[in-house]
Structure formats: structure tokens, C-alpha cells
Image 1 (tube, rainbow, N blue to C red):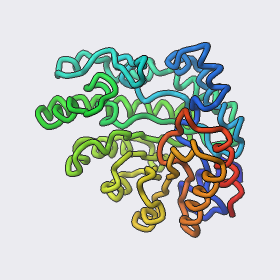
Image 2: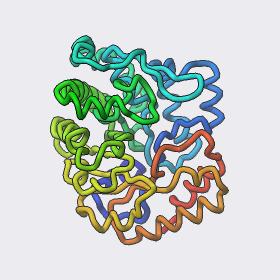
Image 3: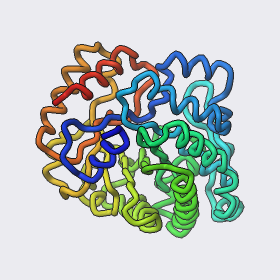
Image 4: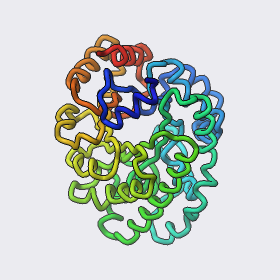
Length: 343
């Protein structure tokens, strides 16, 4: 059984001798080969250049052959950019959008959904390069942001401390909010179809800011749009949902049509496993900060998580969020060694 087969078996909740392993945001600044490439090019340029994006995607799986999946090097904000709202990175950190979306006129002025596949063809080119390079040996993961999470950046104008604008839009002008989410939903459906046609074996939807909205409003603000996307994609195609800070909604997410739910590190994964339907796989959920400690601590905590899931099918080992630039290479190696040698 190769890495791709192992991953698909886990998503199908079939028994395995060990869980497959990949790490969110694999192409992190903790890799010297990534930093060397980044010194010669901007992040956005690398994302938009298929040869460079493919190279960055492959760097982690070359260094750590025990990883069972390669995740496309890209950004969730390519969707707003394709719609006509470019993004950049602030000097002090965080995201800056070219402008804010605040009115219905701003939404109407965005590019049509039909423009998305053409404007993001560089992503399809990257996936085709990766499909050829990987030759079926590893899972190839595409991804995108959820409509709600993308809307937070578009309405806030970038990263935010309080997310007031998006919440105010949701509560005071639902028609305008829904118009934006409708456009994002249709754009993501077109984008994900394009990724699937280009060779992605699974799609992960990142609802990174799903935990910001009040609990009773999560369905209307986020999950109902995710359901729409999943329903529009090919039946039984593997969709993984990561929604940070949404523990109260795990059951609803499990019945959204996803094949797997990626769980953040604040949850006890074994308890979640026992409380959710047996046909929905789980991914996670080691605390990313552990990757800044020591190999001994990483091995100990990874083994503890593995033991807690012993005998429970449908587990993909991962961090509970993306790997950080401060992660140590020796800790990543310890994680790979611990998971791949566990029985």
C-alpha cells in the first residue's frame, strides 16, 4: 500500500496499521530550501508561477519521505484576487487587501464567477505538474478557503483584530452579506471543479475564522455555504473541512457531506472520534507549538495522541493548525519517525 492508498483508506475509515501523515501548511519558512527560494521571489510570484509552486509543494515530501500527502502551495486569497481584489502582505505581518468590500455596489463590481477558472489557471498548471511528478505515489491535496473566511478578509480589508466589519455586515445588512457569500460560493465551486480536473485527489476547505461568529449563527454565516459547495462537487469526492474554534458544531459539520473533519488542538480527538459518525474520518490534532520544543517532547506527545486513537479507524495524523515558521526541522523529523514507526 503506497502513501496515496493509505490516505484514501483512512478517509474511508478502513482499518490501518498506522494513520497516514501530513502537516498543514507544509511549505513553511522553517525549511532552509524554502527560505532560499523565497529570497529570490515574492510569495505571490511563487504562487502564480507553476514551476515554483510545484517545487515548493514538493520540498517537504522530498525532505520527509514519510509524509503521505503533498499539499498544493497556494493561498486561500487567490479567490478574492481572481474576483478583482488583490492581496499582499504587510511589512509588520498580516494580510492587506487592495481595498475593502462594504456595499452591494462593491460586490457587483467584482469580476464575474466565470472569470475565476481562467484567472486561476496557474493553479491548474501547478497541479498537473505535481500529478506527473508524484505519479500516484502520494496523495495530492488541493484546497481553498470557506466563503465566510474569505469574506472576513474582503470586508475587513485584510487581517483583523476584532472582525467588526464582517459581523456588522452579517447582522445589519444580511442581503448584502448573502450576495457576497453567494458569489464566493459559486467561485469556489468553479475553482474546486478546476482543481479536481487538474488532478487533486482531495480538497481541504479552510474555515479558519469559523469560530468567530456567535454559535447560533455559524450555520447561516458559514456552514450552509460549505454545504452548498460540497453538494455541487462530484459525489463521494473526498472533502476535508478544517474549521478552527468550532467544537460545538462538529456534529453538524459531520453531516455536511464531508469525508473528514480536521480538528484543532483544543479538542480531545479520541472523544471526538467516539461522538461522531463512524463513516467520517478525523484529522489532527497535535498542538503546532510543540514543533518549537524538542524532538523528545514531540515524540512523546505524538505517541500519546496515537495511543489515544488506538483501535479507532479513520484517523489522519496532522497538527491541529498550520506548522509555524519557528518549527524546528529536527522536531518535524521526530514527528515523522514517531508516526511512521508506530504499530
